[in-house]
Length: 156
Ligand code: SF4
Image (cartoon, rainbow, N blue to C red; front, top):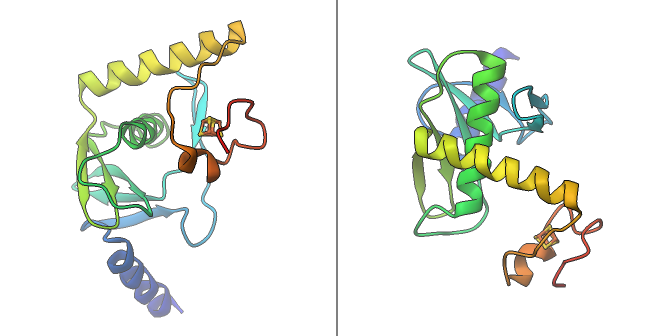
């Protein structure tokens, strides 16, 4: 049984191009536990968490191809870095974005930490005012968005 699980983990590592390290959490094959941030009052589940050199690294696997990391994916990954620091303890130095055609190591540096805090605070004040402004013109995003059934701004 343990051999089969290890074999499955190796296959998944290849399939999703997971970096070297021990997989300590996965939300891809079976749903993983939701992680909460007390500091920001947010929750989320990364696709994978890899333990490497005593650090926990979140990995987010996307189905599309991109030449550059996409801003919304970077913020999503930053959220997971924050969640890992609060739930697993210790410093999370970076996260990894895996696209179909490329992988990116995204440092969870002071600039990204500041941006995360600032975006969350803007989101909170928009929710308070009830004023939410559409910030893109990409029907494809709305088509597959998990919030589309609640969203009044959706494009398709
Ligand atoms: S459905 Fe709404 S929340 Fe989802 S991407 Fe479109 S505008 Fe954004």
